[in-house]
Length: 221
Image (cartoon, rainbow, N blue to C red; front, side):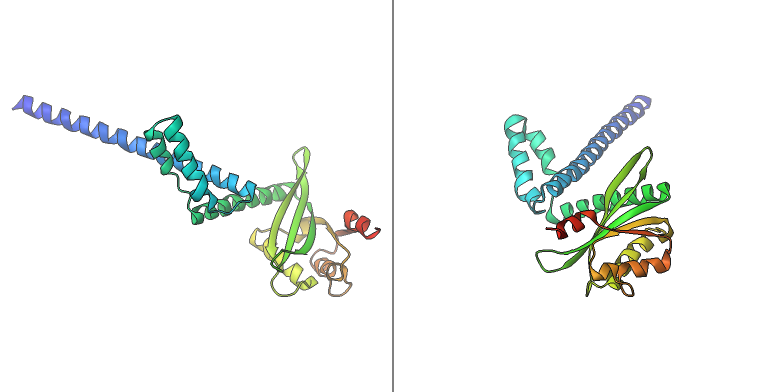
C-alpha cells in the first residue's frame, strides 16, 4: 500500500512539473508574440503603411519564410503574433502615448521650455495644429514634436490657444514654464487683441515671442 501511495504521488508530481513546463512555454511564447507585435507595428508606422499590411502581407510572408527556412513549429509560433488592423492601430497609439509622456516628463524636469506652433491643412481639408518643443535635456538641447491635433471649427487665435491649453491641462504643464514661443506672422497668431500671442500673455505675461525665421525667409522670395 505504501509503494502504491509513493507511486501515485510521484506520478502526480511529474504531471504537475510537466504542466508547469507547458505553462512556462506558453507564457514565453505569449510574451515573445506581444513584443513582436509591437515591433512590427512600429515598422508599419515608420514606413507610413496602412495598418492592414501587417496582417495581409507581413504575417503571411513571415510564416512562409519560417516554413522554408526553419520548420513548421517556427511557422506556427509566428502565427500567434497578433497583427490585426485594430491591434496594430492600438499598438501605435500606445507607443505614441508613451513617447508623449516621456517628452512631458522631460519638460517638467527641465523646468522651462520653448514651443513652436504651426497650423496647416491636410489633404482632407482638416486644419491641423502641430506643436514642437525645445528644452534642456541634461547636458544637451532636446527637440521633439509635442503634439499634432485637429483644430475643431475655425483656426482663430482662441481656437489655437484652447487646443494648446487643453494639452497643457491634460499633462499638467504650466504656462509659466513656457519661456518662449515661435509662430508665423498670421493674424490668428500675432493679432494684438484676438491673436494667439495676446491670449497666451494673459496667462504668462513674461513669455518671449518671435516670428519664425524660416517663414520670414520664405516671405522674402
